[in-house]
Image (tube, rainbow, N blue to C red; front, side, top):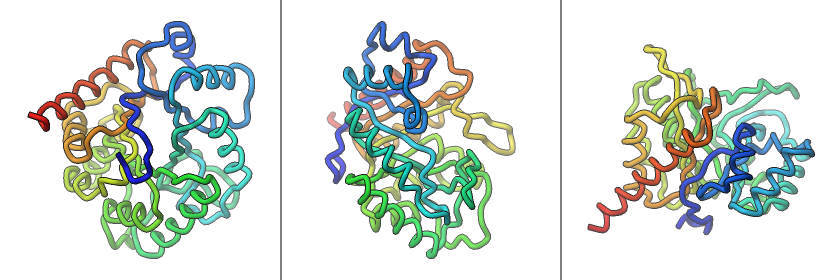
Amino acid sequence: MNRFGYPDLGIGLGLRTTHYSNILGNRPPVGWFEALSENYLDTGGRPAFVLDKIAEQYPVVLHGVSMSIGGTDPLDFDYLRKLKALAKRVNARWISDHLCWTGVAGRNAHDLLPLPYDEPTLRHCIERVRIISDFLEQPLVIENPSSYVEFAQTTMSEWEFIARLANEADCGLLLDVNNIYVSAFNHSFDANEYIDAMPEDRIVQIHLAGHTNHGTHIIDTHTGHVIDEVWSLYADACRRFGDVSTMVEWDADIPEFDVVFAEALKAAAYRSDVREVACA
């Protein structure tokens, strides 16, 4: 178990509107669901009803895209108040967001924008993560991004930056294995070195997803099946970190529930196989 006592919830799925009826009607044997925070903050009606019903039957975690941890605008405490109330309402097991910035001067770019990995940026992010964790009254969980550009002012690797952020801000990590693969391909680094550098006691959750390979670069589109190379990295992560709550993302061209659920079953099989070998 990680240092925060956040539990291993098994294998989960992203909660998507197209699957609401199937989940409510059939109660599939999924370990837990990850809800996109912003979809439920300023809305009532069916989305709120469904989330409340699912939270009665499954563990739920909240995953956001609006904290702008690396941004220079002041932190949005109105947003954080709503997020904290939502987490309390659905008994969210933890709250996560991305290591990125999302806008400037009050304007939201609706994208997860990359950061330079240097000392000033690290100090800035550590301070903001600490403030957010204190406000939420629980350790925030930070996801590693996928990226497509690098900054000339970068002075350390992404994995060094994230490991230091986790340790010095005392936060958890959501290790997105697909994002590691995407960024490793785009920037020509060793994905296994990245995984090996992560602090074991900080890993709270793992993401798996598909992507779109354009030959010269990969875009993290969260569509399609998880590819073999990402499954291999997931197996490496399981060997390194043990059983960690794992969630499959599928956010574009979303197929019927059983197709996505099959990916979750595949993740469960990989995790089980690694455990059996470790115990042999």
